[in-house]
Length: 110
Image 1 (cartoon, rainbow, N blue to C red):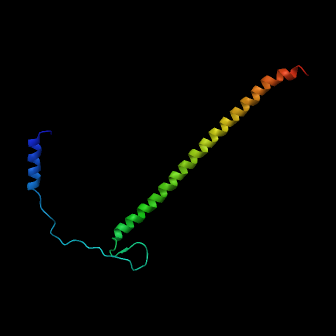
Image 2: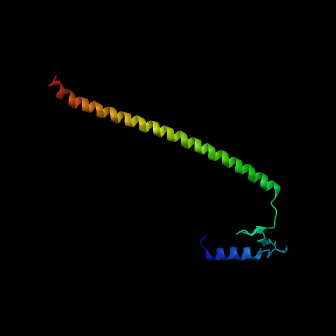
Image 3: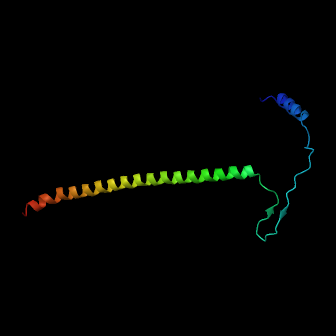
């Protein structure tokens, strides 16, 4: 809508439904540099289900990368085969053209 009155009315309606700030205490994550590394260690633990899902996703990612590499290798072989056929045809045409040009000239000497 391009009607400014309708837009202003909708803004006022949404502002009236604003629940305000969340009443719970803020979540505090402590970061310490006890290990002497460049980054800090977070003192929170990960959910075991999250870690299990992450491990499964990593396994799936490895399988996808392997399948992608296999497809790229097959494509490379096909391209290599096609280039080899092309080189063979060009070499054959060059030899054929040389024979067409040279045989009449050699025929006069024989």
